Length: 95
Image 1 (cartoon, rainbow, N blue to C red):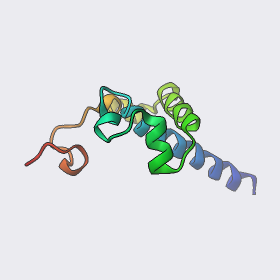
Image 2 (image 1 turned 135 degrees about the horizontal axis):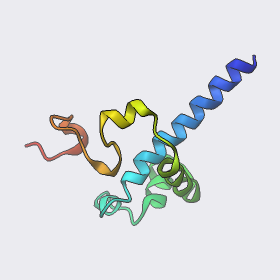
Image 3 (image 1 turned 90 degrees about the vertical axis):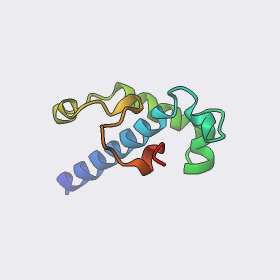
Image 4 (image 1 turned 60 degrees about the horizontal axis):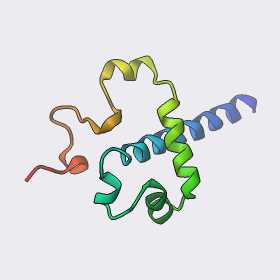
């Protein structure tokens, strides 16, 4: 039972970091404003149903969380950089 609860807790933590990485990406430049929100707190409250302060804490957690070595080798994921030939639906720009 302990191992199961550990796995569930680790999954929730990983989910918090993943959401935080997405929210942190909205902090780059004017991305939140491009979506018609003044900041990530407004976006999280309106679109995700998350408290604004919780969203800011999740973004901070994602910035401070150590990245696994496998992800470090695969290239940058933060800062909005996209691998060449990436999915155009996610980043737009392809006409």
